[in-house]
Image (cartoon, rainbow, N blue to C red):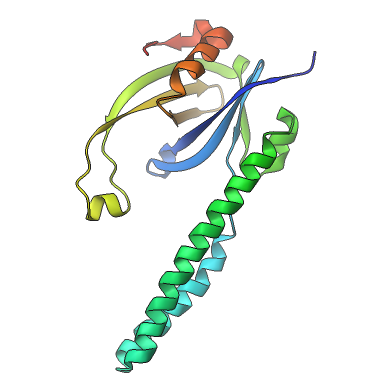
Length: 190
């Protein structure tokens, strides 16, 4: 019998070894494993163009040339916004294209994709955690209110993985995990 993708969930992979950096990912739950797709966006080296524009703006400031300063600053901001938008669009297209592939093709699609076979899971844990968003404009402009986020931790023979799953998806995800790795789940709370 061929491996079937039962469902897909939007999530964030917490990179604990990198200081809790969040990476957007998609979890494809199959009858044998969880396939994690971490979509790649545009090449970050393209951001050098925006840095050059900001450097031109700083040079204009040092040379006391208001036109060069404003042009460099404005161009830098516009380029950063365009690059962020392009990166978002590229990731979304890749994410929608991958949903039609088999689990093996998903694994081979991008170099950062990986799998968590159910047989490798030693322990799985779900916990609801209160968090405060501390990045971006929220930290500077708006006061941040605490919110509840759902973490799913997988401890495998190869390593540990922590995923943040949307509140609307957590019940279905936990039901699937109960179906496939019921004996390995600890602290099962909803």
